[in-house]
Image (cartoon, rainbow, N blue to C red; front, side):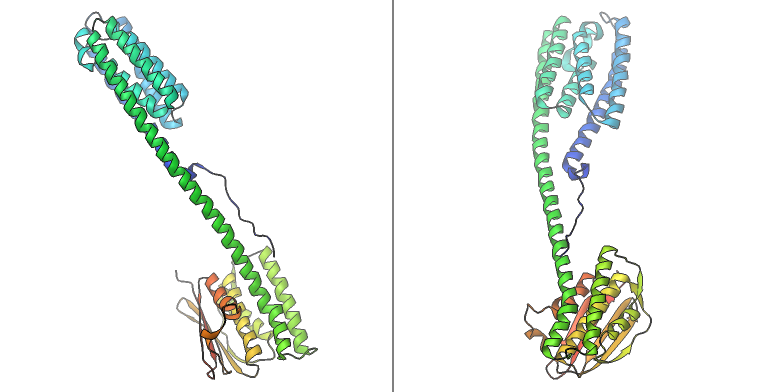
Length: 392
């Protein structure tokens, strides 16, 4: 039996759908949050410039932070959020917090509503969402400490303490939320990877089983069929018919091997294939009606092989029977009917291990999406109907 090769591809982003979705969401949202807070903060910062705000320091600081917000959003949306963006955001927010006495007017500092308070909150939330907890939590604590120090230096320790509690609460909540999501998403991706692995293994096993069944059908319908007929005395040893059948079997096996190495799905004349099958059974009297009927190559091969198997059964079990073979296309359905006036049999009494009907006929039709109907009864002959439809 030849080896069966199944190509597998290395894992890609599509093999981690939950992780990819998580990365998309936790890249887009931080980018939009940083951009929105940066632009709104710039407007608010420039609106209130009462002393001790230093305009000479405020203007370049706002320009730098606004440019950074735009750069952060663009880089995040195009390339994702890496360590450089996280570190840069933390550094700028830390510096802005320490400069609160010169960047925020005293009247807008209380109430945790200053533009630097909003900047700090956005930074700690984004950091938890985009960096591992072992780095994001200390970074958020650093931003909190800088804001608190700046508020104290501005003469408002109550604001420093209040917003420090807010920043730490935001850090804890965001860290727990992203941690839980990462763990659950990791489990989901591992389950999906296991499912893909089992699917690939099932495909390999199914392909191997189908190849084995195909080989067994080929052997059953050629060499084994001929040997069985010889053993039953249906074909006398040394006769011209036996030599012809042996030569036909060899040609069939060689053609099958060639077809396996260079399969093709192009059109084929089913009527010609059926005539070639009849030529391999000169011992039978067959009345054939075979109008031209082009079908895909694999379909022609399966139908012709099914008819060949049925004719071999006639030779073995009803050697003197008269056989009728008809081919027709009804709409989009190709119908092949083979009937004989032999002794017939009870299909329900055929042992499960017998290959002739189960695999050589029904198995071949199932492989191409067709169906086989077998009608017979003791003393009533046998009628086999093979159908394949090109309407899907």
